[in-house]
Length: 65
Image 1 (cartoon, rainbow, N blue to C red):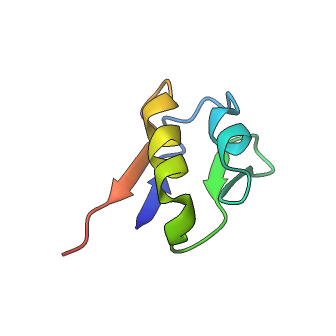
Image 2: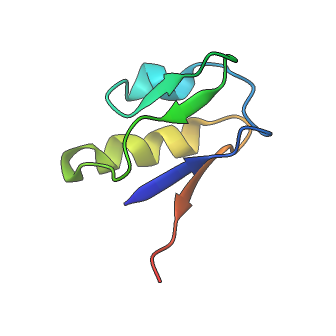
């Protein structure tokens, strides 16, 4: 699983870094970013919950081709 955070949608609310700090953090501009290229299997469910919790829909799961 891979995810992208659309910075133009992120409002920096902190829900994703709070939910899964192993995966998400804030950049110097105060927006969230994904710290890993591929989400570890044991964190996929937590990341899916973070996607659902994001108030602006900024976290997007990348679909594999």
